Image 1: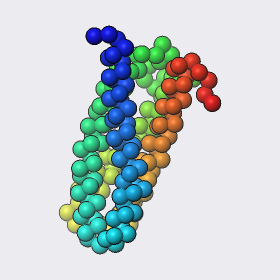
Image 2: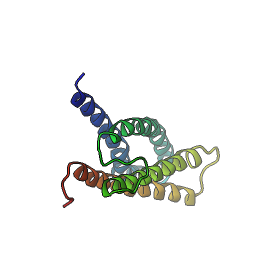
Image 3: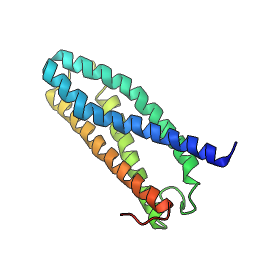
Length: 163
């Protein structure tokens, strides 16, 4: 199998996992959550629906995290400017390392939202729900940062100066 074909498939999968995770966050925060609150209000039905959505989304997020780690490892060795994980040896490595720091922060926030705030037997306090929504928007911001740094990393890998 030609190397270019394998690289194209790995890149496609990496992009797909990114789109599922970050696109899902943006859709949830900007479209689904406000729409559900507008139609159902802030009652127990809203909480039940949002919990069901989060449970299903968590599966996609965890699959995406594993997929991103695996495809990221395969893609990292493609660039001669890659100096190792969390290296700051050159501009490309620095941008990639900053991107990976943001991804680790996203993973931590995702785990916090689903493990700590997602598995409760008693009804949550309103302040807990606000924290959970705040963490969602924090992850959206981190995800946008990851995409921005990915754009710079791609430009640097191609030898183009960032615009």
